[in-house]
Image (tube, rainbow, N blue to C red; front, side, top):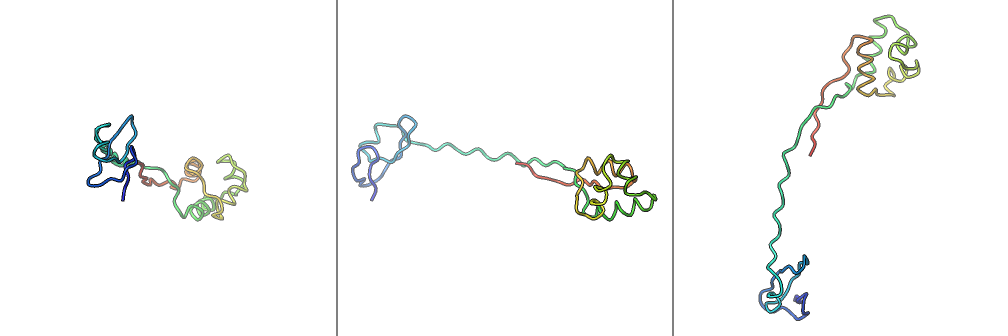
Length: 125
């Protein structure tokens, strides 16, 4: 059983959904003349997904950094000064306890002649 939201009487037969002053309500036949029939707005379709590429650091960065540093016969301190970071940061990088952001990874790439940054894909709605 449903009741008219305007007059409060029980709705017998068909009910109507109307809009009065931007208020949508379910009403009986006699009250339906007080407003206009409500037509829900059509939802806009989502725009197509926009894809772009975000640079990410490869997963085996620690191993690659350590091997390249040793190959060039650099100490952790020397590499740290080349990339303008402390030697403790280099140690953490090589242990895999600190993942460089793409900017730092580019510095390391330039200093050691290696490839750390790979292009990944992200989806944005």
